[in-house]
Length: 111
Image 1: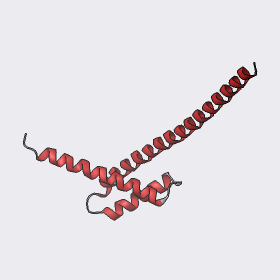
Image 2 (image 1 turned 135 degrees about the vertical axis):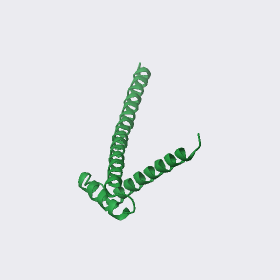
Image 3 (image 1 turned 120 degrees about the vertical axis):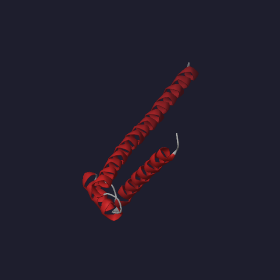
Image 4 (image 1 turned 180 degrees about the horizontal axis):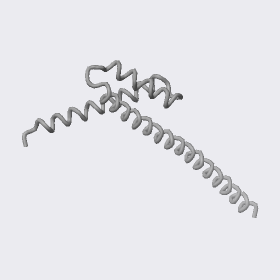
């Protein structure tokens, strides 16, 4: 009878440990998921502001556009560091330039 109680106690504690580990993983997953969604929101905002700056300031005004975008994003997302905002802006500019080059190539292709 004592062996059976010992086995049940071991199973009980093992199940508690598994549940505890699963909850820890789930909480970590949720934090990561929320962080990923926020990062995507920030990136989408940066892309929109970069495109707006491109339309407002036009070509050959890179520093002026960058200053505008950086100031806007600092006001809008004050808890991000300057490096994080710079990375978002550079990624958005890179994507915009890639889209423009792709569009130019599609228009140059005889068809």
